[in-house]
Length: 145
Image 1 (cartoon, rainbow, N blue to C red):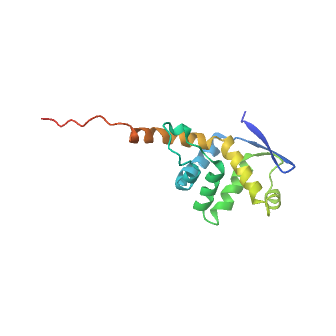
Image 2: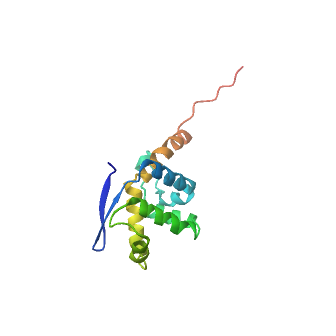
Image 3: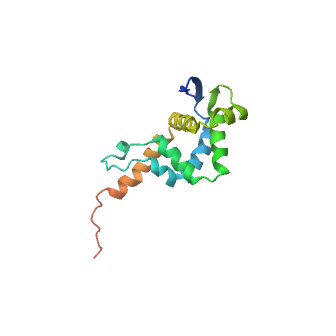
């Protein structure tokens, strides 16, 4: 069973669930294509272990928004919410009226969806190894005689 999470936006109880694998992969690909924007959600503090670098789901969302255009952004966010909703039942009318003038609530919901699907954790883990290799001491280069 897919993991579910209950959140409250004001007084409204919302239940979201992890995306099924195929949909999660499609979203992950879109996110990776926008990784430059997501980098805004990665802390700038130096750390010995990249897993210790703070991740901000809110700033990740902001980075995504900056990278998407006015046609793609609403479609992606609406699809992400629709694919994640359990309760209340998602309808376009609900989406359009629920978040009209309440974009902060929409951001909170998107943050919860990103967190539930572990996208930030995956990013940290996948980025850690290449950076480790980049900053690790390199063995001396030997020149053949």
